[in-house]
Length: 335
Image (cartoon, rainbow, N blue to C red; front, side):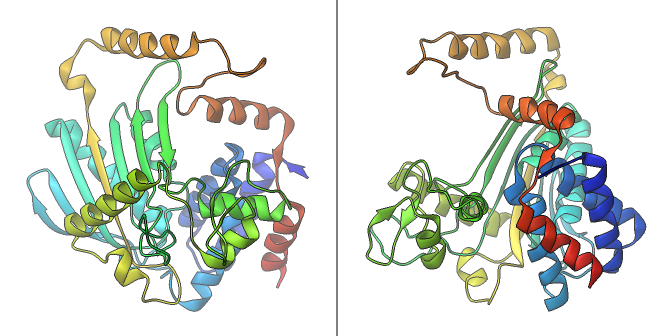
């Protein structure tokens, strides 16, 4: 089914208000979840809402808590999320990194004890809208085996890079697994196979079956051993910089919460020459676009380009939402 952005946002606002968030926080949470879904990332928008509500009921998400600064070392700060809502804490941390970068050119805010930040790209778009370059990452529960191992010991630790641009921001948002587990769940809801192998089944064979991957929580690292190493380093940096919990510690819990995140911001305006920057970026984009396609109709994209296209299309035609998920959300609102 397709629904309007306004209908989605208003429904989620009422649901969050019902779950004891203030009106201001309910509006903000509804806005981010709805905009994520508008951009076509249902896996980390509307599809995550039932689990978010479940985590509130279980006490993993503390409705009234919010991140606060613990320590400061120049342009490096450590914050404690106090298990507050992940979106609110992450947005607050990025705003702080942006403010510091505007003063000194570069800044880093490391956040511990946070909850799932939903779409990591949200904070890349946030920084780009403020005219800043950003690098963000988070650790997660164990859901990938280290290369050569059978059991999951690594998180699929999303990594985000954002670069502001007048003609459309560049935002890379990727997990260290071939498919995020939210995306795997989306394929599962649609009763579809993944287009490429995304993890291992119980017989230790690579599979495109989202059901089998979900059962074992053994995702395939991007680039095989390279993704495995990248994931481990992200976990190390997030843990050390925030003085928070590692994937190992998070894995000892029944669910994923109390994670560690990092928000790095740079202000490119410090170097001046904004027109030259735009020309440099366009040169790279044009060079990658101007290539013979593998198949007729194929096209190359820069990171974030398809998001902008999806956003524009869904604003006109409505946002596609899974019927089962929508009924579940409405059920939570009416119970």
